[in-house]
Picture 1: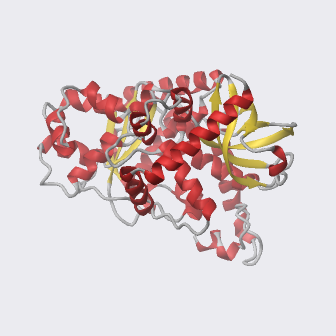
Picture 2 (picture 1 turned 135 degrees about the vertical axis):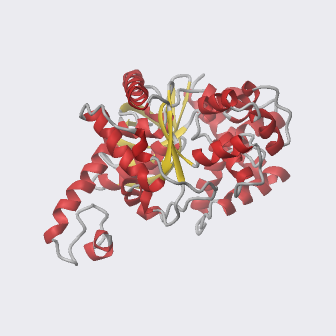
Length: 419
């Protein structure tokens, strides 16, 4: 398919998707709910467009059907090839290495791979993007040609810190982006996953540990020593504690506090909750809030004895951050697993394969690794952690009104001094 023809198909398909969401009674209401649930503060048309595109390309409806899948069902004559490409698209940050007549040569910070990226608009409309700048954009591949579906932000060449922060955010949302189109990175993650799982099971003699959020940071420190320093004598009894099982939404703080939250640990939450560590043979170590609560609900076989039990089950079944291998394990452990799921979703699933094909479709499309494994193997995240550590060392003698060494661009008194 010629590039010009593909550009036209991409644009027309995207226009059709946007019109469909706006005019379809189910999706228009669902999109309003999506904005409400995520507390988006829309002040400009560009912000609304970004939310709308992200909703179309990434999200599921309240009925847990992916928006792109719903569109395909309702429009069987649509170009399925373009729709399937959209399903594999992802956001990341790209460093511009060369500006061509109709494309950019750029490095994707997520997977450390170089691409030639063709934007949907003429290059003359993108004159504000210069050599060595960083762009936050969504990339899609069709017939081995790579396109920029949307450019959301541009960072000057000296704003590497901000570009790295956005890269890590994107990696957490799209962990599969680290290995896409990069076989070397795929092998690296596969090897790390084998190492993590082998060590976890050797030391703890199990593939799952549940503890409190206040002890989770200690567990991660110990496990890191186990991997990096060859420590091989950690007792899982160290992380045993009395837990109160209940489910609630965790406040992740303001977006500008992202790095502080990402590196500050689980204990910064003002509410105690349980956290599970699950060593998934296929995709690595998962850190899963409320895994103990989920187990307790299955054990009690009731939705009435634990606070927000229904919402907890909905999260574990529908979230892309929960591996289907965990659900397969729970179905083997608890005979009541499928009847309980049917009760929550008002369905009639016969086996675990039906549940996975319904709620975990993305896992069948591309390689998936846990966010923990992805960040562990990310040079960008390693840089951010290094900057945070150096900033901590430098703050001892810094003046209140000097620029904060963390690279935020704020004065020290308005940034890290507060912590």
